[in-house]
Figure (cartoon, rainbow, N blue to C red):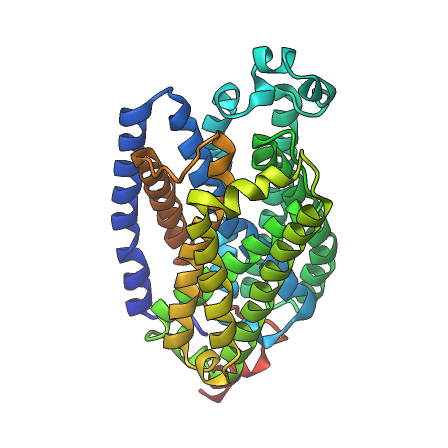
Length: 393
């Protein structure tokens, strides 16, 4: 049976405590330095939006893998499952945002609504009670499909029932649809409504791609950190890496296409309630970040991922992936922070504390979940070659 080696379990376990320490220190610093202030909640929302992108994307890719049954999912499936099982933690970590609604969003401030006719027209949707109800629905759906996919995967490991692969595939279809609807609405609620006068019909789909890209990049990087230990070591071959690299290239291209398409449509429309969103972000002090994203989030990974040699070498591929994870943090910052009427990038210490705090707790929970199950799926009929060494003993 392809269970984890003692070295693998030890390596995974050894990473929990450092991340827990970082998370606790970050959260204590975030609480101590800015408790109750406007920046306190803004920094938290930014950090939360980044870190929840990884489990959200992992859940989507996990269901995509069950729909397609591709071999590319073999080395990353347990990583995707472990990441998705952190949703209960993220559900709890969402609570501070609820308490900070009046300090984060203009539509949650009675004085601002009373003075703004547009906000009054949108009050049927943008109000605190309906916002909370929608968030409860989102997390309920995400947690439900997380439980469903993981429970069937555990049962497959235990019993080897071949019908479970078909059941996971059957549930993954409607799961992907509901996931996409929830992510689209959550992007509108949590991020786009920071600027309630502005809107984009591409916005939700752009966040879908951002989350899938960062999740895939994170998963490949974790595979690299475990690739020297069994059973991951024996599951890695250039063909699977090539597929993962091609999939990541597709997400990079889709992110670029949607970002440019949104810019092109808004710029061509030249409407006074839409164009300021890009004027603020692509000109003036924010322009260097836009250029940085264009070069490092598109051109560099695009040309690197076109090369088979890069995609077939895990060490090189993982370097590209970790850079994309970091650039996703920059991308989300570039999207969210100008909404707070800042004329230039203002990197606040609370941003660092919140990112470290939520990130440390999330990585602690992730590695805790990762060590609970074998790092390769057992008895999955889609991967018969995995069991060949077992039959040969």
